[in-house]
Image (cartoon, rainbow, N blue to C red; front, side, top):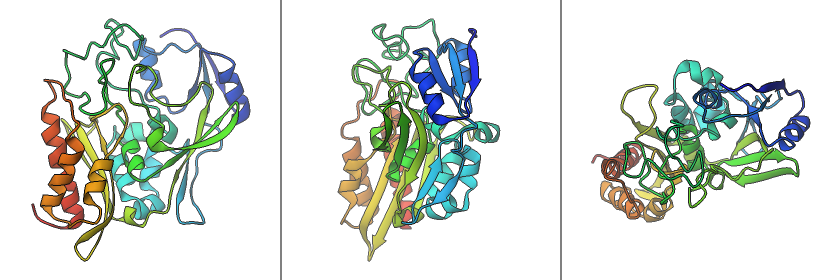
Length: 329
């Protein structure tokens, strides 16, 4: 690990100014991802600004029935919070499916959103990687691709975003609050993470020095009827091969509203808008669920080593919708 300077922030504005003024500075939250990358030589910050003592550690209901989640709320606390369990069970389930109990006690909401890929080539500094060193090439293409993207990839990167929490939040129409040198801004979480395009080194639309302060979940009645399904190689401490966050509202056998996001399949949490459009206003039947999954997967472009993910995601999505609808396959 390279030498670095460390400071504990007591004020958000000063912390932002410190990072914005130093291109080698980074914010430090729980450190469950960043510290690993520092040990591997993937990240080499010259200065860390610890923001864990800033007052962003509350989960609060909003007057309109939504929830505001502070950036420093720990994953374990968020998963167990009564408001989240009652109003957004999909989020609690997604959080509990991630990492381990010890890591969830350390990991923060903002840090979870800012996780970098677990691509084996990204984490190995001896291999070419466009995400780590732009223009060097993508070792994953033609290599080991079991965990890699089948949707939204490019010739420059086929890595996937590893978060479970972010998948659920994207399905819930979450909004991110950010504070930076130019002030505060808000954006839909679905627009926060980027597809790789020709700049895979940029995971998000954040500018240097911008700090996540909170995530807002809107009042969403159908979210109370939601779930998270994750397929992985082992029961715990494993990243998703594929995952599905879904919420469903049915009246008289017809789908009134639906929210779906998928994980483990793209460079960002993948909002399944084609599937949603195929479902709204149609019967809640296994056949319709299959048509929705097929519509979403029509654009899939798997690698030879992960073509199984197409069928796996289809089956997982259909099974999640059947469970929510209470219908047999």
